[in-house]
Image (cartoon, rainbow, N blue to C red; front, side, top):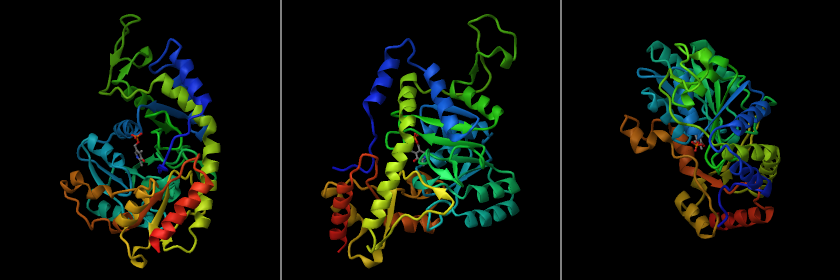
Length: 385
Ligand SMILES: *Cc1c(COP(=O)(O)O)cnc(C)c1O
């Protein structure tokens, strides 16, 4: 089976992990700090806080920005459930903005309309989470303009987009957001097995993120309410969690980060090759806005199902049977049973649903070969005709 995604692990990655396993420090320590500095430097952000998953990063990002009961969080329905669940963890309510049918990212015009209505009803969200679908940045400048106008915070869910560029600058520099989140899950651009990171340019946000990552506990005497009672002393000042990354994961992360540009270049090359191979077939190929350079986490096509005498399900099953690990991204979050129980229904965000009904992610990862792409597209062509 050719998988839809696969990590690339070289011997240098393995050696970096072994070195930490042989050292005195396994849990969060000096290597995590080095990894944070390396990612912050790569992206041009002031601070980076490593955690055990992007889901954890989204959670503490929402808490840091003060999200709580009575508040609203808005995100895209075309995402993994974690982009919405972080709001629910904080006791807030979640709503969605329908997608742009070309980029599959949240539609800025729909956002503008919805904000105007929400302002009239005094139900403005506290946080908006734009999701950079497949590695293509959302129109952050426009989103930031609207957020500023209405006094809303922005968390970029860049789980797909480390290594991507927006307006010729790295995604993650937080120029248009309060916090940016990355995922280092094995299918993402670079991996630490499981892992995530939150980046920000604001010191007070970085401090609180660090505190919430580890139980809300500080050992920094300058941040304590009372005087220290000795070298053992720590204070819990907030309610936090254990969301720490281990040092051997961070070692893998540092080693992977060195290869990120090579990975992204290879993904771009493969995406261009798919683009050529798929020309003329009854489907829409991924389209990029001119001001972005995607990291190509996914190669997601939209089947022209009205021109094909098979269903998406039949096409998907036939490809899987042929040993091609296609996938579908994403089931619109609002149609999940958990969200339907909160009052959402099919039909609420028709563009996300329309796309979902036709979507197919073709295998894409740095070690995929052009010959395999040829086989994938040939099989797809035969199934479609
Ligand atoms: C993978 C992913 C997440 C969650 O990442 P984890 O590191 O697995 O917690 C969140 N949002 C999006 C868009 C993702 O693709």
